[in-house]
Length: 285
Image 1: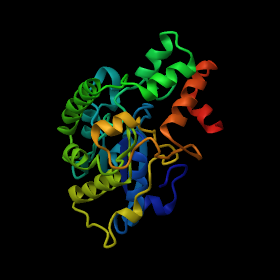
Image 2: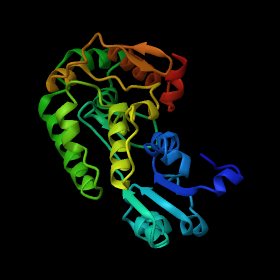
Image 3: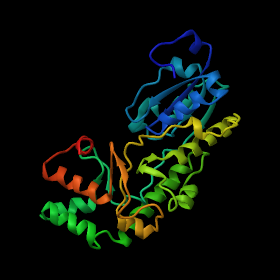
Image 4: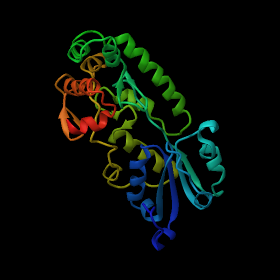
């Protein structure tokens, strides 16, 4: 991808803009690598969640615009999708792509700026005054992680995902529901794995009317932050009947392979030490 400076080669190519969150990173790289499309297009990624601006001049010469729909003007301002689309040339091609999110593997995950990958059940146990060892014992070996809670949280997230899916021609929810028990389709709640990234790449080419590579899309699509696969609670795995996860499963956690119990122990240690940056702590453990 050409970004730091404009070369003569880039100037001779048509511009393809990808406006997306972290899920756009492997897609942009993919489009730059795909035979034919990559040779004819300069692919530029603009990261939406940091409100990275796109110059009108860039939009004015854009031949292909690939974007995750942004609708809320009060939040996104000039980056709202309808405004960006209105600045494209009349002959530009555009495709709305998904921003995929899946909660079934981690129903008790909580978002927020502080302490990445918060778990609401473990947080509640710690706030009740249990020691770290006690909280870990209850968390891992009792029915505190229960089926009805998993079902309701997953169902609410899935309902929202259906709404988001309606904004893009690339359908993915049914595919996830068909396959999530047989293979780990996400690394974290919003980091889809290779199979789903390939699905999006394949569908983008199809909707643009571009031929698929003869050797398939898989060799051209990279992983999205594969250094961390968030471990899955064994009781969650048992509830959903996951074929690939149990209490002995090892997950990559920033350079080390860990079971869920080892990961949960690191989580409790970080909390006990008053550490707010869980990711940095995990990199050291």
